Length: 256
Image (cartoon, rainbow, N blue to C red; front, side, top):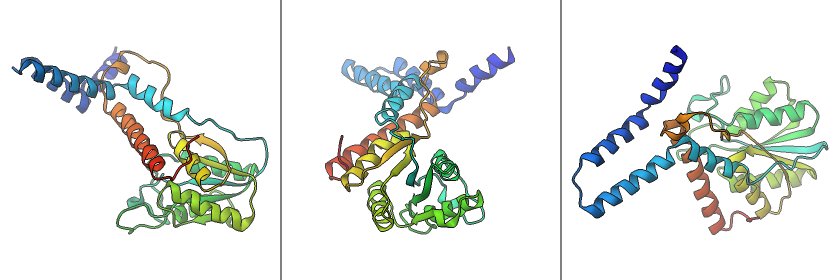
């Protein structure tokens, strides 16, 4: 009984759930003009759908499965891992604070240590607007060395600030070292845009999407009730979809 109650209370105290319940109550009680009332309920319905785990998971899963793995059973010359997994304000040479997407660097590290790849290119500079933090690629380079990856197996791109520059600067490293067999690793939701950027700079890569967020199975009734976690997933979908559109319109990706 305690287990069931704890699960029910968890969503009942979710701030977003409480807020939408309050909004719905206000809509019922408010005396709007008929058209205004229809518009208000329509907007409420859109917000409800966008914050429902079932819808958010479906949207995120659709984004994550656009590009599947093309990893081959070969030894790659290098594996390119895109950064975007650290809380830069809280990370330094002594301690890294991962904010998410740690699967990217962990999988790349496994491939190199298991001799499925000879080297790794860690791509990512300081992506903040102020430019006050250390390059994420440099911090991650120190991190993987602590876990057994040799310094001569690591190539750092400390200058790229976005996905297009990840591709552009990684190509320079690839051409400098004459790499032929290349594997790209990034989060599954980000892979379509990332692969498009690499295609736009004429760098052919195999891809290995990691860091999946979507839950495909329906759990229980909570999947149909609004939650803050669902809103977070939908935010990822919206951000990445806008990114794909903007990159496509500005010629930064080659759409496949």
